Length: 68
Image (cartoon, rainbow, N blue to C red; front, side, top):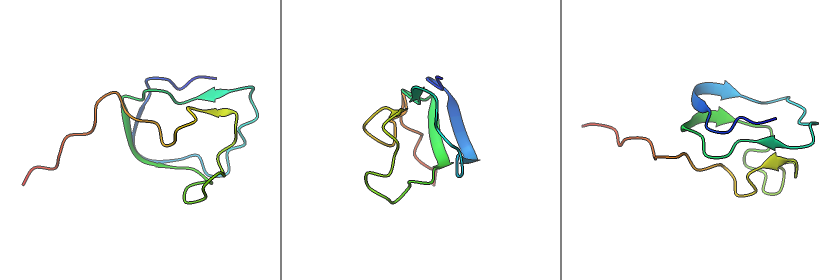
C-alpha cells in the first residue's frame, strides 16, 4: 500500500491502525502536519513494514513559515 506523495495536513490520526500489509509507504509526502500514530514518542515503536525507515517522513517541500 502506498500513500506516497500524499497530502497529510490537519488532524489526521492513524491511532489504532493495524499495519499488516506487506509494506506501507509514506515516502515524500506533499504535506505532513498534524499526523499522529500509536508509536509517536516511542523510539523503535514504528512497525518495520511502515516506510520510510527515517521517521517522520520529510515532505517534498517544508511548510511555509508562519507570517507575522
